[in-house]
Image 1 (tube, helix red, strand yellow):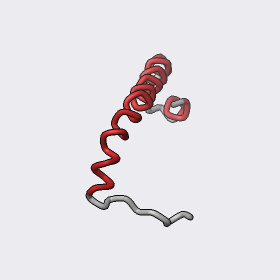
Image 2 (spheres, helix red, strand yellow; image 1 turned 90 degrees about the horizontal axis):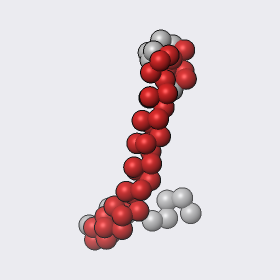
Image 3 (tube, one colour; image 1 turned 90 degrees about the vertical axis):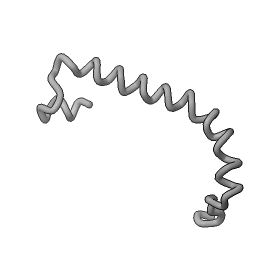
Image 4 (cartoon, one colour; image 1 turned 180 degrees about the vertical axis):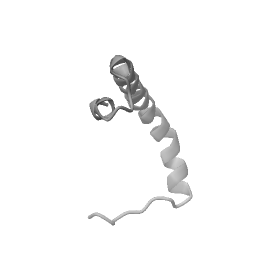
Length: 56
């Protein structure tokens, strides 16, 4: 966010508003993702959209 103000994309007065909205958006995702993953994981496994063993 700071880089955007330095480059002139975001006015200085809007920095804290943008930073706080960014944090709120991240918090919403962190709160919703455990519930979404609980319901989406069986669907992903049922349709074979899961790859195992690529990293290990």
